Image 1 (tube, rainbow, N blue to C red):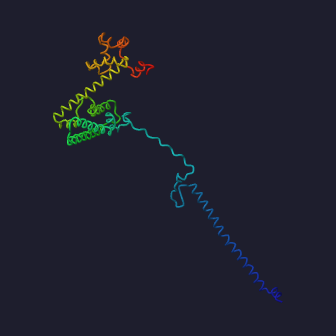
Image 2 (cartoon, rainbow, N blue to C red):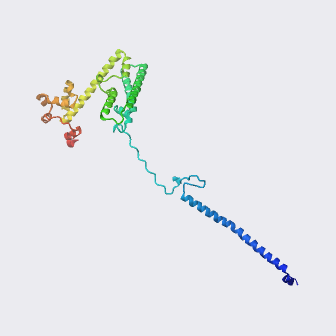
Length: 323
């Protein structure tokens, strides 16, 4: 009875159709809502890929619109090997003055055997050695020693100032005449220090030595003069013995022959200052004295001009296999 009523009632059919439509709409809405996150994810992925493509095409721009930075070399997988730095050649003031005109100070000090520091060390050492030598001969007060050392320091500083002043006047890209003229000034400035090793009569006494000798008594000066004479005689004796040894190597003299020849070096000291003078003196010996000292072969060798050859080669020739 209930079933027949449903089959015949049009209102029931309308309700059933409405329920079916609502159910279909609800299921469709749920499907759409389920697909929206996936679509958004796809769109986001496409947008991200497009942004990366733009960045790859234009590496200078990033997301913020600012210029992009390059990948640091520390993170570069294929970074090149570091290039070896070639060491710059050291400047040499004596090579080419026109190419290196700002080093005239080095050129000036090179005339004295080294750099500025070497010059200072040499001068201070010279003062100390002179004071110590005089101290062994006569007593020097501590005040005099300090005064001499202070004077020497003033001289060193004054010379350094003169070097800087002269170096500032050095010509840039000089001609030959300009270079010669300037080098004459350098030679004149350094002359008094280059002459320090010369005998006392040919060199100018520095100021610190004048201060030293002016503070010595007459007795101390006499004692110092005697010591200087002994030192000069000793140096001359060493020179004569050295010349005698060179003559002996050339003639092949024995010990007895050298003993006979040595008194001649004392009787005529001027003739034995150089090998050339000694050789000429031996050539002028009387024949009787030659036969008393030398063998016939050595006399024949003396008649020949002096051979200016290497001493080592002469020793090898004289001694041969016995060397």
